[in-house]
Image 1: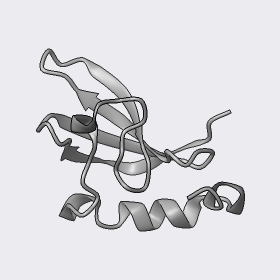
Image 2: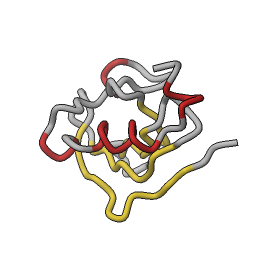
Image 3: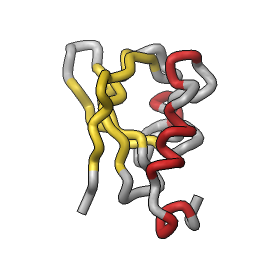
Image 4: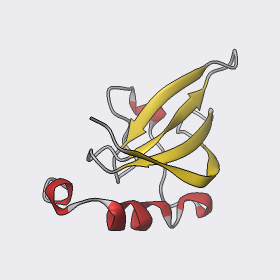
Amino acid sequence: MSILIPLFKPIHTTDNAGRKVLIQAINTSSTDCIHGVIIGQNGSENPTNWDLNGTARDRPSDCNIDLRKEELMYLKETALKMLPDEIKKFI
């Protein structure tokens, strides 16, 4: 069971391929705790989860995000604070 906590305001960024990404929630039940969508060229929204290194789960590396970007600076820190110890031990 996923426990998604929506962000007050979604975060707009890009993936390594330059596609638009919308970060929408933090999943406190997974090590892939950053939840959002990658916006395809045709406008389709592709649900994606990233870990705290910005690596996209079950996606090519061009779907990864750089958590050092200004708009994502505090996301990793916030997500880590929200994760229960049962999940943190796997990080």
